[in-house]
Length: 185
Image (cartoon, rainbow, N blue to C red; front, top):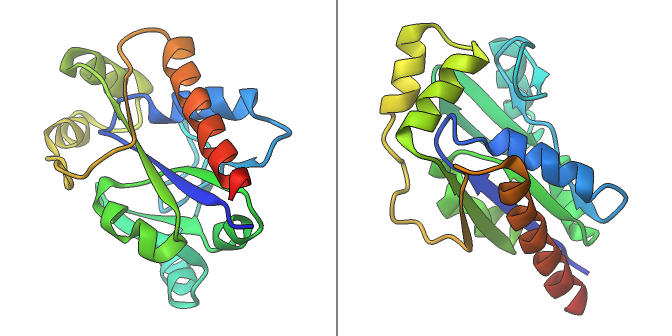
């Protein structure tokens, strides 16, 4: 049985990590894997990730320890290679990835689905400022970053201007549908 990869994408400040955390809690104990990304950013407020130095990231990347990597906002990001094994074992892997890697997903994972999370500009701006991860120039750069895959087709779009429960429920329902289709094969 082969599982699937579900890419959750959207601009900084759209609430991807909060929606993913909400879904992860509701789907605990089932065949969903929400891997922690490896990022060349120190630990701090916001998403839970594996912090590494740039040199360690480069060495891990060269050794093939990532299924996906990308660079954005002066940082390197990676999804561990172990997710490919989980998919081969029938798991549905759900991860926050860059929109720039979307064209490669089917080649890397076989079955891939995309969920885009969007939010109004004013809510986005407030969320980025509130999380306190970036100085004002870096926060503005995140707001100004153009969508690297504006026309890429998505399987679900979640407008995250409402409650976390509303957005999270949409994601959970979608993921359960992916799981049902995966199990039916």
